Amino acid sequence: MRNWPVHELRLTTPRLTLRMPTLDDLDELADRAVEGVHDPGRMPFGVPWTDAPAAELPSAVVLYHLGVMSRWRPEAWACNFVVVHEGRVVGVQELKGVDFAVTREAHTGSWLGRAHQGEGLGTEMRAAVLHLAFAGLGALSAVSSAFLDNPASLAVSRKLGYRDDGLLVQSIRGRRATQQRVRLGREDFVCPVPVKIHGLEACLPHFGLESP
Image (spheres, rainbow, N blue to C red):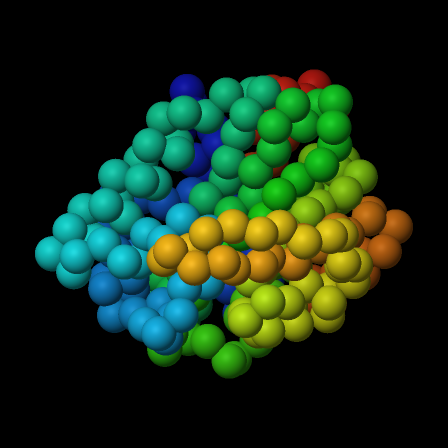
């Protein structure tokens, strides 16, 4: 796509392709959301988007991701990659930055359809965007967070070398909930899988960076 090269950016690992979503991808992603992302008895997200009525959830997922793409600016961007495994969209891996050209710090967030959890895909897809951040974009640090009752997400972070970086308390579903913030320095990241980055050079100005 000549006028929006970011749409051609993709990452590949041994099992996954991460790409900017097409409309068909968003349809499939909405299906994964409806099928279930987490135990309904708990809420792993700071914004409880999965609490939307089932009839409204699919369109809300599609419109949210279209909105993220429409708000992209070099000084405030978010790559909401769909994660494709064996030809099927299974979740989302986000990498975002604010004033990244100055801060050199990236934020990550993700979700996987419940049927695809427990297979190591969460680690592989986060490793892919960390490789993009550090090796591709020149990040110096990456940050993330997870609620204390979400040990699977925290286990992924610790497996990849993040260190605890304080707590954040907020109200979720009318109850007090605590998030563990985590931080990863560039020097501490060892990518556990091979990752290939495709189509990055043309995208660099859209990340607020200069082309080589």
